[in-house]
Image 1 (cartoon, rainbow, N blue to C red):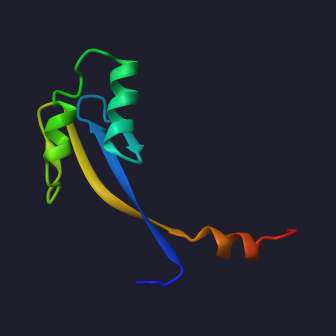
Image 2 (image 1 turned 30 degrees about the vertical axis):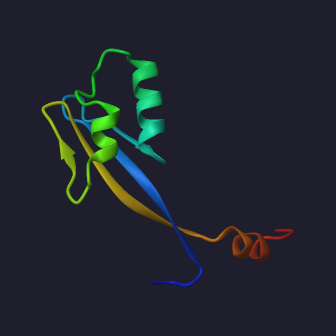
Length: 86
């Protein structure tokens, strides 16, 4: 893989019924946002269950699909150096 890249975890949430997709940096932010917004158990799974889920394959129930993957970005110092005064 490229030496000048940084890898970040991404949690992808897909609602089956609406087709909506959301992306989060971790499971905690997913649950904080979704439960705060809807507060109706619309995910159909508990946070503690997913914390222990291995994510070797996507989690899926009748409401959602939750995948864990990686986002590759440029390391910040290199980006700053290449874009100074532009």
